[in-house]
Length: 580
Image 1: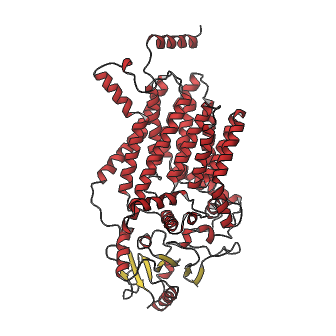
Image 2: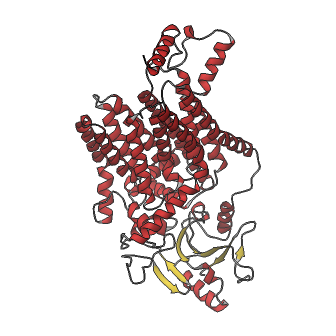
Image 3: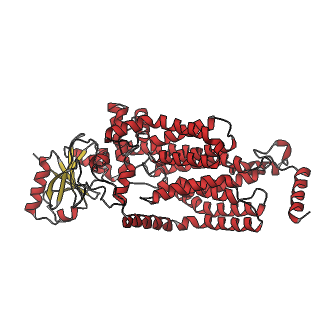
């Protein structure tokens, strides 16, 4: 016998002589009694997948409460869609840019709890906290299927729970970076779909003969498409990789693709009818013209000099400073962001090599910027790879396909624009697939490396959780935008009234709280503050003729029309009454 065969014989003899603790919860007859038995059970509990799901749910609830007043521009549009769905029915959810599932959930949540306007943001964050818990459960499902695919039947519970702890250390690292419950977007739903799809992919590799996992893959991907249109692309790539892994999947993979497309067809048809051509959604095109072609988002597009012009853009009232009006035909708190596909219709996505290189460089800078979060997983993977080479071990090729899938989608994002909330679930899948490929089943040094990396990644997260818990007891003042909404009401501005703003009102959330519509804006606020008294009054008079009852500004310079403007006490906002 050579040395490797001798070593295998010793391991087999040891297992035969003294069976290890089973894969699942330790059986009563195989664990020590007394204190050691209790300690073993306690250790099993606090490192198990259900325990980590509970920790994630608690963390999500705390984050949702701490950031209950926080809002972002996308969230305003989703809440507007939810309101329109409650008033006019499900077809009001059809939007070429915003997907329907998230506003549908917000509409259901509002119908269930009937929050006041001042408490609406807090209730939406509570919904996000619930979705965060579901994302943790979906990740637990993926992790369980992942472990069943890679671990041998006689693997003990210690190794399983070490890997579970490592997996959730990655979950807390990435899912709490920019996708936590205080971001009011459907990215948590995207994470749910990605984790479920990856888990079902592992299940399919184990049960090729059963139709159910394939049908489940198609259903999950279709539901994910209703959350974000990019999931349809992610799903097609995953099914292609499933075919590449083995031709045995051919018929069943085609069935999964058919289920996905049939269930997604209503949304595809409605969006295509809305934009006038076949489309799964205009988000990809818009992101390309914004972040690659350089057409400026967020401020109202009136055309590109010497290039594209909008088919129905906002109306220009003044050129210097630029003043835009957009009261019709789009509804919403801020119509320019309620349906960007409408306002940017006419902007064509064009490939330009130099612009594409700039976009890729920006994405690489993003990944370089998060290297501090990547360093311990990188070090751990490098050590495990060296150990695998030294032991002449072969990689677990079953995880190659998940590795390719995550890298492919991350690269797709990098071609346009990427953020943590987009990349987080794919980064988690990437690291788990990479570690699963090189981690050996029977070598404890490798498992010690995994445990060390998990501890190094978890340590800062524990500190963050402790600081969040302490913050719960700190007193906090009234949300600034609630104060502004109350002052506008005191001035006679009522729900449903129209207002104008100095600057694009993307972060002016008082309008949503007061149920107002922003129908005009002074796009160039710096130029507006430099106007003479007479010129400024001319602009203000023109804004009054649009139907706006007030002009609201942030950070108005001291001395600018102090006799006309009213400062909202304790805030950065001031407003001017327009019209009679």
